[in-house]
Image (tube, rainbow over all chains, first blue to last red; front, side, top):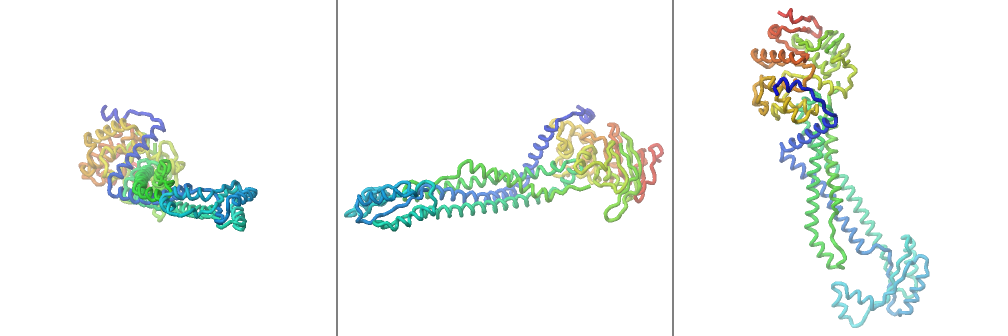
Length: 317
Length: 225
């Protein structure tokens, strides 16, 4: 094909195909621009990755505290320790009285023998229990409030039980659980706040990087506009650039969190094993990590969108 | 193809760049716009490409009233115009072929066809086989040829050039102008702003003369001497 033929042959193309080809070019162009300055690109990715890893790490901590709370029981159960001189019949009578209350679901009588066996089974207590001359434990009543009973009603019931004859000590398990739940709620807020603040920081980091890139490519932008590039075409490489930053930074953040999990898993497992052995250190789910990654891409794209909206000023005529 | 009807352009600072200018250019015609520096040549070209809007009068390009072209429609209008600049406006970090290909990329032309057309355009301006060269490795005249190849590669019906020989020596200027004359054979309408009167006389094409924004003369090619 000679120059004349190459220049003269008209070909029609569908709009969708044209649009797809424009995107493919802009995508490649954005990668080319990032590869042109590897150090700056890597620095931006690491900074954004660290910013995104921090809320993920907090979330990891929170998830494990929630695991801990779940493992320790989530009921509003009440432990009633009777005086040591209360015998089995009296304990059963007290249990029957309590079962008659509207706010009580179940009452289980635990004998001193059951109590000492349970204590002996717990790690670290076996030898101590063996060395005791006799069983010092009293009868205990384990009260489970009726389902749907509110916290105020439980507290009212606890006060009534405390006043009953033969009762030595009442342990309201729901109280510490309520405190733990409140602490977890605070943790969730802090994590959310941190995620929002660091997410905004990531948007600003990418926005500033893209702004500098737009400034350094001002001539190219003008040429593109003069030869007929639409506003979308001019902006597209920068949006892709932001998304690439987000993709890479998201990967860095996910890898950092996985590293954190790997580093902490063994010592935390040893720590919890020294207690009941019922607890475990759990990592973030793959769905959570994938969501974090997607959010990172969106944040990168958003940063580029903000910068290009503000700094890609198309000449008005 | 192009119709200026009592067109005026006053810039915001108050300078009158064009005053009551009227002329017509037929399809396939080649027209030189000349005049001293500040006469309004560049403004006239800017109005055609909608880089500026007129303060008064009407402009028609390809049968379209430019006053009716909204901001969003400007890129489409410009894709139908090949523009050549005095300073080439090449992207120095891309090869000559990549520069020439840019209008085709913007138009979404497939890669294979793009390659063929870029090679064809470079061949037409005498730069066959130089596509991989960086603009910095080309002479000023070759850079201008790359600029012209970029302007013609999308086969626009209209080519406008603002002082395309402004930075070139007389021999190169003549070569570039001859190149424009040869492009006319493809059927394109060509509008060139130039202040080089001696060169225009040798080209023997229609010349419109501007002076302080006024169109003072419109000389047919046969009468240029």
